[in-house]
Image 1 (spheres, one colour):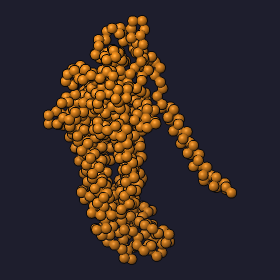
Image 2 (tube, helix red, strand yellow):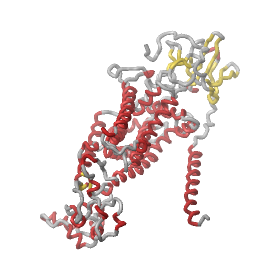
Image 3 (cartoon, helix red, strand yellow):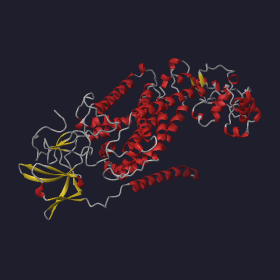
Length: 454
Length: 167
């Protein structure tokens, strides 16, 4: 049982002192060493700071934030092209949106009479108001894009296959929540763009069979967009949906961590997860039931104590610092990008919402313009309800329909071809709806007239 | 025989299900919009003689058009809801073609609100009108769905170029 006790925290101060770095340099070094040995410091940071494998593992174990990560990850997770960090980028954007959104909340009242004036005040009278609003807007668009690309990436990497089926389902729910967040936020400026985009978007709901009209009335709080709609969308946007995202995202990340962060790839050789498995039922002294199945020791264990028996080569690296450093760089990159976008481009604010005048053209937000394009060709029940519902249901069920365990593209041609075809169709519809449609939904080339609304 | 353990094991599931149903119902009932009784929905439209034949007059207070549509059978006044039956955009009246042409998705209606082309599932909704004294009055609470596809009582070829930029 020695390997189990070593995963615990050092039990006495003597043990901790033994783990602390010994060298101190000059007066400041001595002072900081003294501070770090104080009871107060140790009540906050319970782990030693020693830069040894054991010290790093203990840091991960005793730190709430680092505990979102596994202690060790397969080395190839570090490569940028492994995941393009799209899931992490989405999470960073959600963080930026939360921070900027809270700032905007201080200056915004969700009332029909004052919302638009508040927007103008944010643009002209609030410190950094326009910049914060721009960053919020561009981050929102970027988050929809990042979440979508994350889904596409996960599909092509086969990362939805066993044992990650349900995490894919959670991911699809997060995509829907992201769209809901973006759409509810779209109404809040109460300008012509928001009013008519949301009119078109919510009018779709009444085509739902049987419960369509009551459902639409529930959503917009009446029979037309008005004060109840604005308040409902505000409550959804700032409380209900973000809280749901935090909850669901936590489960999503937790499952990524539990599932070992990487997809098993037979062609690469032994899967790294197995490298940390205790082979052959564990040390002879330990009770067998503790090591049945896929028990992992997560690399905290002093290797010699376990590897008395043969085991595959360990290709894992410590999350701290290897992955964390990369994540910090990506987070700074994302923040820089949206800040630059916010400086470079101003988020649109059209005239005050006017229920008596529909602007031409009235377009939905870009991520719904593919849907709007479909609506121009098919019956609303088919284009507005059946096709989107079928798409969502197919996405949710994908891991349970596609039971082929192969992860390489050449061994899963049917899945790749079908998904790529549907993806291309969705992208084509979105591009046409966004760039090639003008007043009356007539065909307009973007180089002659630019009708793109963001 | 059902033991106490079995009873409790299933009982909490039944209980939570009932609670969830009750919570959903309560939420639905509390969030369900109340009918807006404050506004009567009655809009005065003026003297019927003010509406010349083959014209559409927009009445912002009622979010409706009053049209004087002519057909072989005779002239008829309509109060048409501005709301496109497709997805709720305001349908503008195009004076050059003499038709309603929706800028959102390209649905076109004749002056009687009957569907001509585009994705709308039916014609423009009609609002009830009565004559009080010498004045027309519309009741925006009384709406009848527009005529189905195929109705062409008031159809006439376009008078001139359309407003949607179609060829």
